[in-house]
Every structure is written in C-alpha cells, then in structure tokens.
Length: 183
Image (cartoon, rainbow, N blue to C red):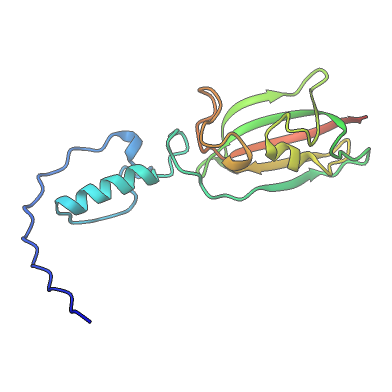
C-alpha cells in the first residue's frame, strides 16, 4: 500500500481590514451578530459571513430567515360541545393569524389576517383547499370550540410564503373558533 504524500504547510493569511457595520437585517436584537465573538482571517471571515447569511439571526421579519424549527401543535383554548369536524365535512370558522415571533407576547407577532364576523370562512376539511396545518389542526374540533395552532412552514406556506404578507419559511399562529360542521 502506498503512503500519502505529506501536505505542504499553508502560508499565513494576511489580517482582514476592519469590517463595516452590518446592515440591520443581519444584526440580532442586541445589535450584535448572533452572540459570536470571533477573530477572523480571510477564509474564516468568508465562511462566517456565508453561514450568517444562510442562518439568519432569528429576526422573524426576514423573509430569507430559516424555519424556526418549532413543531406543529394544536391546543384547545375552549373545548366545544357540538358536532365534530372530520375530513370530508364542510366547516365554518372564525380565525386570526399571526406570524410567530420569539419576542412577542404569546409569540403573536404581526397579525396578517382575520375573519371574525358574519358567516366566517368556510372550507371542505381534508381536501387540501387550505394549508395542511389547518386540515390537521381543525380536524377533531367540536362546534363552539376554540383552538390555537402553531404551524411550521412545511405545513403552511413553505419557502415561498404568501404575497408580501407572509414571508418564506414563516411559522404561523392561528386561533380558530369552529362555528359549524355540515355535510
């Protein structure tokens, strides 16, 4: 078996000039850069900048931010007593939707939509006519019940987002009240 040749020693890299102030979208809430303190040389600085841009800072308004990694959850606020919502039935709901925020009270960031009056919003449960998180989260509710859904991007609007209201990779919070089940 032949032996691998010895690798030559790498030359020392020159010191990097002072880096300019990072734009706000690359800063974390404390004004720093993700609580990292690093003395960098050129290749390390390039790698660090690439990783910082790819990972985001946890700023929930950054449309390029990665998913927060928060799992789907459905929590009953009020348990209803009426008919049960099952796939294949038409349901009517009132709802409010917020962008998930790690810093807002109740994690309710910017409210992006609501329907809290009139007949509400109607859809065929389990048909794919709404985001997957709604099909999963509304199923099993009883009329008169209210449920809080936390919906990760893969069960919401994914990497594309929705218009200029819901950024890509957004985790969403909905509070949904089941008004009726028919069909």
